[in-house]
Amino acid sequence: MEERQYLTTWKRYLPVIRLHLKKSLVSEQQFKLNIQDFESAGDRGKSGYSFSITMENGRVITNISGSPVARDLYEALKSDEAIKAMLQDKSVKITVGKSFMLSIKTSHISAYK
Image 1 (cartoon, rainbow, N blue to C red):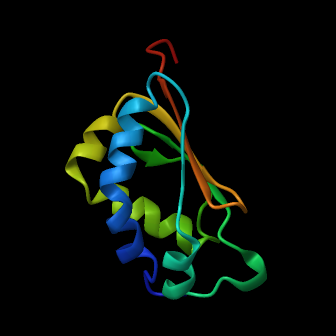
Image 2: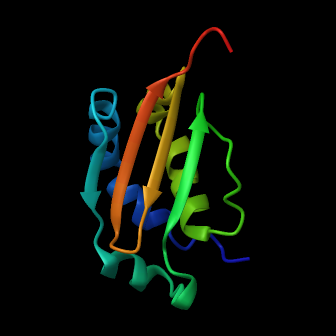
């Protein structure tokens, strides 16, 4: 298993992610990632860098074990106190597609679950 090779890259993006996470309560947010940042951290080859993470109350509810890029993003998010607070009582879906566009969709979790 690769050793957190994307963690440093994601930590550099945390201020931007924090800003977009806050805005995502109003509408879906998107911003372009720099492909060179990820390619220099590790070569994903044909498997690529695309992934989707769904979190509820700050806990991942999708299987991200097969994606080191997604796992390291989650580690970076958990290490940021402001982001951890924003994830409470929310359902957040973060996706990165082939075009390196990161999307964040956030909704409140219903109390009537």
